[in-house]
Every structure is written in C-alpha cells, then in structure tokens.
Length: 278
Figure 1 (cartoon, rainbow, N blue to C red):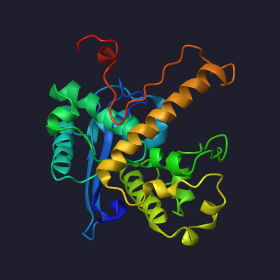
Figure 2: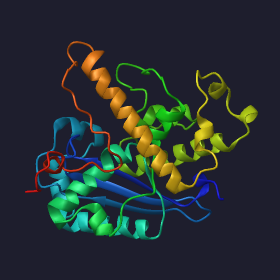
Figure 3: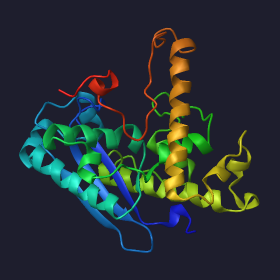
Figure 4: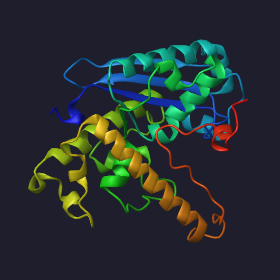
C-alpha cells in the first residue's frame, strides 16, 4: 500500500469575514493539488462577501471591505466555482488536506453552499466526505501536551505546527489562503514521513516526548486515517468540554459548556436541536 502522505492531495484553505462558521462568509480560497509526483496545480479565489467583515478578520488576512467589493467575485458565483472544484477533487478520490480543515474550513464551505446554492457541500459532491486529512487533529494526536509558544501563539495553530516539523515560517505571507494551504500539505507530509521512518531514525524531539504515537499514522489507508481522525477529534472535543466545565480559569469556565465533537462536518444549529433548516 502506498503511504498516505505520498499521495496526491488537495490542500484547502479559506480566509473569511469572521471566525464563526454560522455567520462567516468566504473572502479568499485556495485549492492546491500537490504531491503524488505530479506538478502543483493552484486555484485561488477572491470573493466579495457582501457583508462588513469583522475588524479582527481584516487584521488577519489584510483584505478590506472596500478591496473585496471592488475586486472580488460575486459570492454566489465564487462559492459555486469553489464547490464544483471541491466536488471534482472528491469524485477523483483525492484526499483534502488542511489545518483545522474539519474544524473550520469545510464547515464554512458547507454553510456557504447552503446559503448560496441551496445544498450542503456533501450534496454538491453527491457523496460523503470520507478522505479528509486535518493536520491539527493529527498534530494533537501524535504530539500531545504541547504548551503555548507565547501569549499570542497557541500550541497547535498553523505556525506552531509548521515550525514543529521543521518548516520555515514567513509571517508576511502567512494567513493568505494559498500560503496556509501549502504549509498544511507540507506539514502532513512531514508527519507521515516521521511515522513511516524506523523509530531509531525519527527526530530527537520525537524521542523526547512523553508518549510515542507516530506509529498510529503508519501503514494505514486514507480512508482508515479519516475514521481514526473522527475518533481523535471526538476525544479532543470531549476533553475540551470537560476542561471548560471544570478546570478552565473562572473567566472561561462554563459548567454547561457543550463542544460538538463531530468531524469533519457539524450539522447546522437547527439540525442539532432536532428542527428543520429554515
């Protein structure tokens, strides 16, 4: 069986109008076919979200409301193009890779498809998404208990993951969809490569970890890896929910906190509550 990290992958990343997938709109997208011994094929989009963006979001991606309005595609046209391209990737069996792609990006695309196309992303693809590689989920599994780098740099954000696996980080290019998508694909390759190395050839920092989990990524198919990530994402969510309820600092603690553990797609709020989509 060909190691999963050497396969052709479709790296996906979005920059959006805010952090909440239920209200956010796509601003930029990159879908990059990379690896597998073939040339890299890059597609990017700039979309006019049609609503004012959150100031914090503009700080991150640097695209203003005025620039998006002047240069961006119509949202319905852009979302349709992105969804069609993702559907082609899924139909070809090419794994979708991204950092927090199952926690954010695919859910953002799903909501935008419902909003503009009247269907879910799986409806557009005409099949479930079963070949997703989320480098945040993988990194938390194989390198757990990592501490924050600083007050502003979290333990599993894209920069931290990239630097952990020896990738150079360019802060000027960071938070652009194309750059972040490529970095996620490269990080996935490095994780898979470490997993498939003999234990004695793995990096020194891996040997120093309290747990040795890289073996869990070795010798598995992409389909099996997807199922494993579903379980790991569920465990992470349950653990985070318990932390919020009992161990978080007072300003963050919520005894009634609920963290949805489904991955890579979460149902829309009305479906979570047992109702119908409006």
